[in-house]
Length: 233
Ligand SMILES: Cc1cc2nc3c(=O)[nH]c(=O)nc-3n(C[C@H](O)[C@H](O)[C@H](O)COP(=O)(O)O)c2cc1C
Figure 1 (cartoon, rainbow, N blue to C red):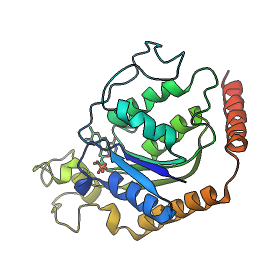
Figure 2 (cartoon, helix red, strand yellow):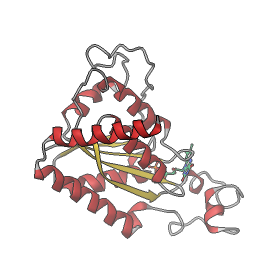
Figure 3 (cartoon, rainbow, N blue to C red):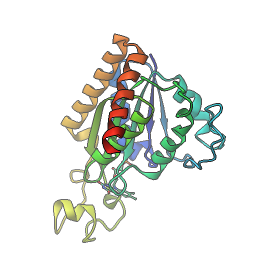
């Protein structure tokens, strides 16, 4: 049972809350895993060329191309993204748009797999975690847990954070804020966040070890999606 972990943050792992949480979930799963950061990667969004319709292989060649095999081979996913403007950041969105290649002609390559969605934002990470769950559901992948947290907004390191009246440090701490290691949010220093990451990883590992049939999971997800589309029609 191998898990693929992806951090969709464009920031280096050392300063990325998403990377820290994705790794914490992977570690807690007790399963073997591969980890990939999208930092520095050039990934286009889907260009709707429909070149993937016949064989479920995207014809756009970029840094997503070598990841396709890992996506297909994985039994489960832990994927995280930062909150940009109350949603998924563009890099992770582009990454997921290219999963359109797995949508055609009842291609079951990803169906019934399990996943954890991770979201981190300067104020909170719920929007990107919800977006990731939505992308998973289009491939009939079950999101077993979502982990969300407050990370360090760029305003803490831009150089103007103590004086800028519209920056996150002012919004969160008010006038006269001092930027110190204590005031910079760090997911690794939030016991509740790290406990949630550990619980999500354990749940994912336990569900994988139970060995439920992928088609049974997929059927539940397909039914849920049908219901969702019918109710919004
Ligand atoms: C372009 C941009 C837009 C952002 N928009 C939001 C936002 O709407 N809400 C929020 O909570 N944080 C926002 N942030 C802050 C990031 O979500 C925050 O820095 C987060 O910790 C990034 O995750 P990372 O540390 O893994 O890179 C934004 C950051 C950038 C660069």
